[in-house]
Length: 235
Image 1 (spheres, one colour):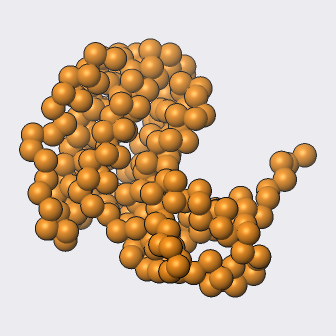
Image 2: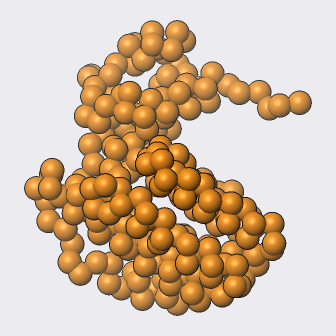
């Protein structure tokens, strides 16, 4: 029997999807009452769902005004990717150490999805494949809490439409960054998997920070991430 989904869970998922899709635009302000009307529910589950999304940084509660979809700052990107470095670099090494044939086959299939999305210039499918590949690598550790944390971190940047494809690099370039990571996992080479994942995340983070800085007028930290890379190398 499928687990029962509460009204709060349903509204949380619906709100999250509306933010990620851009239906609720970055910077837009909404009242609890308006959101309750939108989803045809009472205000209590909406409040609970809003609190969850505020915890992830996707929404900001403004007293006596409502909730605002948060704009993105350079520091948001920096913090997200520093956390992702500390989680995904060792996860890639773990996946390479413990990879079975099923994981390698699934990762290879994901790369085929990447190639198909590149061929049709389907950015939405490419982003789904990107998430799927990273999720599979995280899942190899068997820790659902860590996997959920990375999903939440990715939500923070995706919710604001921040995406390097066709702005800082092509879909094909991003695809080529993922291929050697999968090769390292398939070769059961944890050092290479960790290094390649670290390089991929750092490259992505710097490009995203530069992109956000053009709009916000902020400075991009340089050098970055410095000591954090050294720490990631040691895991």
